[in-house]
Length: 406
Image (cartoon, rainbow, N blue to C red):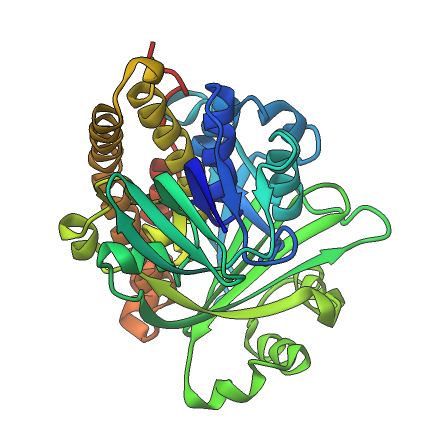
């Protein structure tokens, strides 16, 4: 069974659905293939910085998401060794920091909002890509059920183990030597935390939490992995016990965030990243194929830009393809193919250095934040804390632009 599709997007995560909705807003149809039998909401929530809200506004879904998630007005960094706050930034200040918008957005809410804006049938579930072939101006996308799709454009939004990235020649992402435990705690009544992004640094660990709304708090805990930690990978109870032993000097109400979290709401995942030089020299696009999101630039979570940059990718790619496919009715197949190729090259050029900067900054910030040793601890707590806070705001101030260049 073979079918021809103008644009096939592999993966119904943030990057895939953002790209699909951006194209839909421009009147361009696409088909999203998702290997799971429904939307994947692993990760619970993520920090949306100003750059993410600019992308969401470009898609026309910023306002309904704002209504469901509280705005954060400050960033507080605390040492768990001393128990003392080492830096604090206000997001509602005047001057250079005016206009920052940060919220903790629940992943399920975002994905459902994106999916609900797409036309019926735009997402095909239980559709796993097993191989990709070339056939003239088309790509043959072979699925696990034996069916084949002929795609004029193939976009890989299929995460860190991307089949499309592999086809483009990218290696598997590198292991950063660290892992992250993430979770969400739901309160019956108000959690009473201030609307701030709270981060803590200690002996080789980094953790923090964000109030998403009045009753929901998302948290994360990153640590250096070792063979000793392998036994807890399948045991949320052991993950929780491990964390509670490593929290250090923190207030009781902060410790309670981790203590109150149900075991079903805790996951662990290794942290992976694409070495930044691969971004500079690799094929982000090739002929009528490209990658976005984690398939393109997997990064460590230390600056909170994984999901945000996926939103940026989707808006930029939709804009570039929209320009390329303008007046396509009057084009021959060869001319359409060349226009698509040029559009994807334009996308790759626009996103290459941004991705390089994000991956590099995240890795360096993570090394400093989670480093161990007296000298590094002293520098982080006394000298570099303000610098680190500034990097979060700097990386989150990017503007990906509107969907239409006109």
